[in-house]
Image 1 (tube, rainbow, N blue to C red):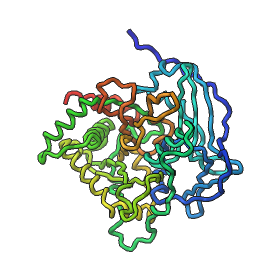
Image 2: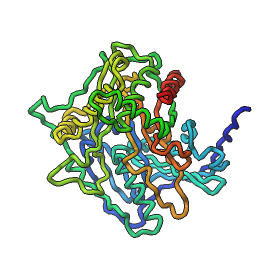
Image 3: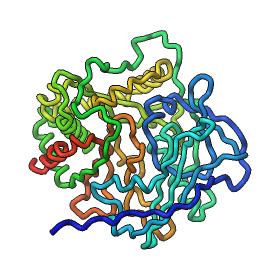
Image 4: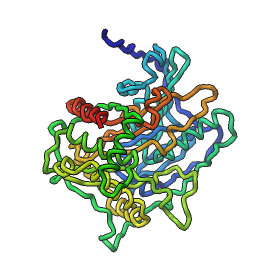
Length: 431
């Protein structure tokens, strides 16, 4: 019996409106931090959040972005739509067909006619069942994952009748600015590989990648971690992130059929809030970028030859190094003094960027005033248009009990590599 076809989504969209503050706000230009102004962050990432302030991102004469608060004519672009079906008929956006979510986010140019960038766009879609989706896009130059969800939760709280959010926002971007003039070149965080030595794939580069979702059950993940502990000579215990990260990195490289002598880089984001400014820590409400990159570089041959537990050890070592205060300081200094990024390394698939939503708050319950949030997915609409990305997300409320303790893996791939990657991932079930 053929599987039931999902209904064709038809949207009736209203005109775009600009959401403006309910009362007068001071006009000002706010500088961003070094970690906010990273070229790779500016170009590829959007996080989900919600705010009612009107902002524009403007590029200063020094080439850096700043936030322009101006109450005269600008606001947050907002569009309302009505769908021709119910949420249940599209499985509440659950499953592998995440491309469906592309229609539920605001397909708006990143800049207006004057070259100003919109840091935030909102699309609200109502379904026939009475449910709705909130498609939110925010520039990663303004928030990181924790900050994005803090903003989202704050607006939900205000919309529910609170007079102020439970966590008040803190700017303080000036505290995370690196040194531009570095006298000690040894302290700079160097790019670990160049374009000449990087691995290549016959399937890349391509202008369009598709986003797919794979689910790893709690029991499968538990067996993977147990096998790694048994395989390890020192009996070290791997986290879910380290275990799946190593497995996905190797699986993705095989699926892309990258050349053996080329180098491949596993990059992941490390939260630095607890490791910055030890004498005077960042306040809880800080919502700017407080993340640094950690990475492991291996040739494709090494990646395939090493045991999975050895790959996990390399990831552990990189993560431990990134937690050091000196690493964070040197990372900021490097991005301030030499912000240039070789984006060809992203296009040829040599780098995989992995991030985890487990600790940023997206899995927490949010009170929508009687409406239960059942699912949250990264919509494939420019979310990670640059580096090949991978997001580890916790289960949603639609998942069956077997997903308790499991992980949803969202990743972008060229079409020609999807089948082989799926086969590699399914092999995990036999562990």
